[in-house]
Amino acid sequence: MAVDVESQLRELREKVEALRPGPEPKISMIVFSGELDRLLAAMIIATGAVAMGMQAVLFFTFWGTAALRDPGRKASGKDLMGRMFGRMLPKGRNQLKLSKMHMAGMGTAMLKDLMRKKNAPSLDQLFAIAAELGVQVKVCEMSMDLMGFKREEMIDYPSLEYCGVATFLAEARESQIQMFI
Amino acid sequence: MAEHDAVKILDLKGLPCPMPVVKISQQIGTVAVGQVIEVHTTDPGSLADFPAWAKSSGHQIVESRQEPGLIRIFVKRLK
Image (cartoon, rainbow over all chains, first blue to last red; front, side, top):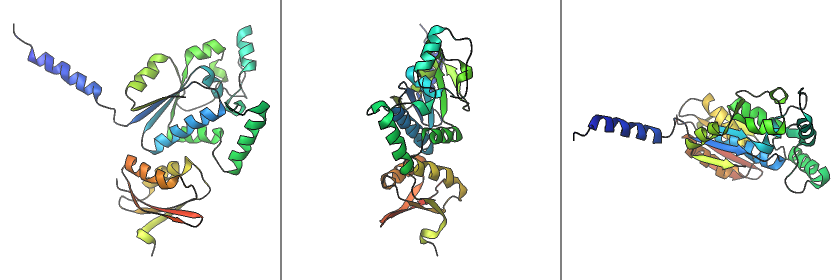
């Protein structure tokens, strides 16, 4: 039986091509937690990564999606559960609590005060820097739907994209660093 | 004459992580290849972070020096 060397060669070439990393090293992060300290870490790593010459992609899912709400926007047409979730979950990044030592708001307020005194960038500043640097933000459509969040209540962010797990996996498989925060 | 022939001083005093590496990554393109930027920072993490940044982004740390209350880092653009 004749072996089709050419087609085998083509197949091998395609496999090698697929293994080759993209033009730029990349980091993909799942931002699952909707907590101030964890989101700070995610934003610092993402902005740092771009400074290091990498692409950074953040996937906001589950509790993380609440951090992308714009407190100045209202969405209409929510059902009862959607309204309940909407009221109980933080309305945007500035309402997030610490994962530890929140202490009915005292701990979180103290940390924010400390950050101001130490000149550490706030979430507002980090989002502005991330946007300027081209950090990509993607939002899990299913989480939005579960929590009853509507697109019209989310922040303005360049390249904000609504997607599902396949988009994350496609990015993650060509990233050298993957994180779950 | 400036040390290491630095053509620019980047004042990052008072800025903590991640701002020093974010700022140098934005500023390195403003000088020509082969030229040196002198960075002033008060973030002790920069002593480790600048060499890591340089290694990853393909530039060179000519010298970094801890002085009382100030860290001076000389960064050469290589590409």
